[in-house]
Structure formats: structure tokens, C-alpha cells
Length: 178
Image 1 (cartoon, helix red, strand yellow):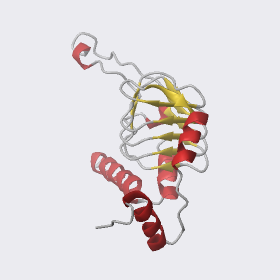
Image 2 (image 1 turned 120 degrees about the vertical axis):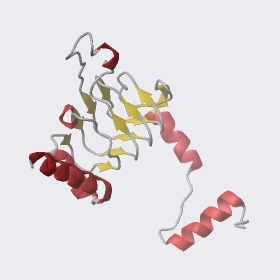
Image 3 (image 1 turned 30 degrees about the vertical axis):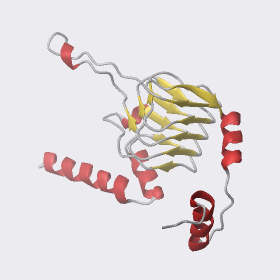
């Protein structure tokens, strides 16, 4: 009966992570043993089997399909060394954004003030104030340089959704929305 109960608990947690509000997601992750700071947005379900080895700082955005790996790949050696497994922590410091589909490997610290690009594979620490991307993730630019690029491309759009659509279509399609 305890196997059945633990499966219900696992499925309930998964449902809360997938369909819950951000408040519910963060509360659930904390109950799983993760340290999660304030003002975070977390949109992934992929925290591996040791979520308590992951620490998330304040004002962090983790996009969908980001995968956290807290242990190594030693399966081919398991017949020779029954309990050979390498574990490591993952620390995401304050004011970080991790793009969709990124993979974060063990023994990595990210930030503060860093951006990890979509589908990047982070195999080593990401220095403060940098933007990294690729497989393996490599330095692209500083956060200040990225900010300048963003400001150059900035489009001031109204809060009203239909008005925002008109502004974006005009700017990006030249008014040709068909």
C-alpha cells in the first residue's frame, strides 16, 4: 500500500508543478527540498531525482523544459562498481534567466545577473553579468552589451492586447497582417 501512496504523492506533485500557480509551484518545490528565493518564475518540471541539491536565488526565471541534472552518467560502470554515482549541486544566483530547453549539469553555479540561452548545455560555472549560449554553453556577451542590444530593438507597445497587436503588426509586418 505504501508504494501506491508514494505514487499518488508523486503524481500530485507533478500536477501541482504542471498546472499550479507560480505560488503553488514554488511551495511544492520547497516541500521537495529545493531552496527557492523570492520573486521567481519557474516553468519546468525537470528537477531530477535530487531536487534538494538545487538552490535558486531571488528574481530568477526558469523557462519551460529546462532540465537540471544533479548526478553523473555512470550506468556502463554499474556492473563493475555497484554504487558508483557522482553527485553535484546546482546553484542559480539572483537575477538570472534560463532559456527554454537548457540543460544544467552538476557542480554548476550560474550568475548573479546572468542569462543562459535557449537549448544551451551548461557544463561549467556561468560568471556574473554574462550571457552564455550553445552546446557547451560559451560566453556570448556581457549583460550590459545584451541590454544595449535589447534597447536598440525595443518596441514601445500599449498594454491593451488588440492595440499591442496593431503596433507590432505595423512595425514588424509593415502593416501587412495577412
